[in-house]
Length: 334
Image: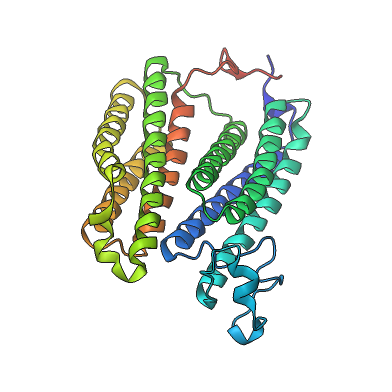
């Protein structure tokens, strides 16, 4: 077996690694923007798609709209459309970030092409991410056309998590090739890592259900009654809150096993510390929302922390799983 470093230009590896990381950052910005959209009720700030109130650049004043704009867009929204420039631009910026993500993932795909004959997996990961981002854009249009239907919103979030996972995997492989580091495998710890990832994913999906429940309450009480939202939530909120204890315990146990049974590199140790900090922030923002009237700033932070946690967890998992690509200390060329 020969080392990959003998076959690949280090600049190409560095370029791919940088593009993958920048794309991941952009994805998290989109996730946070989506959380802001939900927390401010700006999901229908643009009632049509891909345009916004029929234009590519949305209006800033109601005088820029047709006098009968409520009739034009209200039929679709059951007559409840009311122009709000803040909500319109929040939703519009969210869409612009989505377009930027599309460009970034396309550039990442192009950065994988030099590796077709050496590490084809990189190209397939890049292509998968690109196709899923395109699907996510289409799905976003359906979220609007279905008027924020709960199933569509949940599916939209699930696809976003899958895209983050694909780009994280791509970045991990590129980093491993760039640094030329072989990590020790820990099969048993890796299996526990899979369970932790599943539990965290379930918790994020439960959180999505709680957000949908909040939307139902908002339609009844309005945004001025934030202090009463939690009292009106159903069983989904209590399941999500209780399950957080299971997720916290599983994560801490996994991290404990890694530090106890493996040689923890400084990078892995820092990743684990990062996960613990994010778990703490996630718990804190959840408490703030539960006991302090669901402040608007806490919702997008709570959502973003959950997705960020899964990204870091996945890297820790990749560092501890058995790899067929390493034989006798060198990486197999495929």
